[in-house]
Length: 290
Image (tube, rainbow, N blue to C red):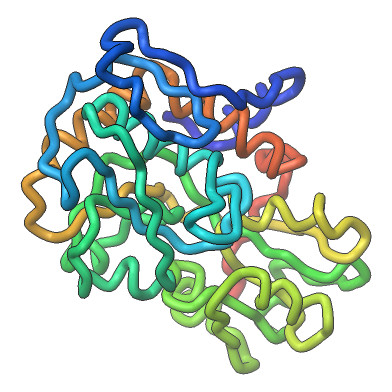
């Protein structure tokens, strides 16, 4: 799958899908399926998993994540790119329900918990994380965006001299500390809303975090914050599995099918297009200036 920008540009004129469709086969078998407001496609039960709980796909994520998981708590999530991705994985694997479990991002990527089937939380695949967990093929490219207050003037030349906020345990934090190496202390936040609020209130001057996450904020907080640049990472998001899971091969197969048949591209248009509000390809690319 190509970068999010190539997909989001198709968003205009696409209506939000809010009904769960019956598959073209196996309708009676899937009559008990519960996937919120997601549309599911493909063949019910085509793939065969050994889930943690029979008939249920247990998915870890970190909330809130608008566009990716639309809901503030696990019980209220009914739609979103990654939720509906999980729904399609469950459907094609003959599992009738998706169970969402919320956890702090550092816990999700730590490899210290195995009581789930997969994690979907905009997780960038890195060599370090691959030592403690398994990963799927990448399903979305990722870059790091720079969010600032609307009245500030921060660019690639002076960003090292401002107070930067990052999300705790993310590749953005590692990038800022190890590559940007700012002259002022870096503040790590446990969740995105607190980080952006700190930016608005002047406790930090810039946020460096995944572009696909930050894109939603200028739309929701118009006139207060704006995205001024992004850094290339040559990395992508992947589904994370517990190390040694017997389901890796089968999960990889179903995710690759979702990429190849265009399902994930459609989910990006429906859910991320609305959340982004702008084409990320139009955001200037910054270089690391020493």
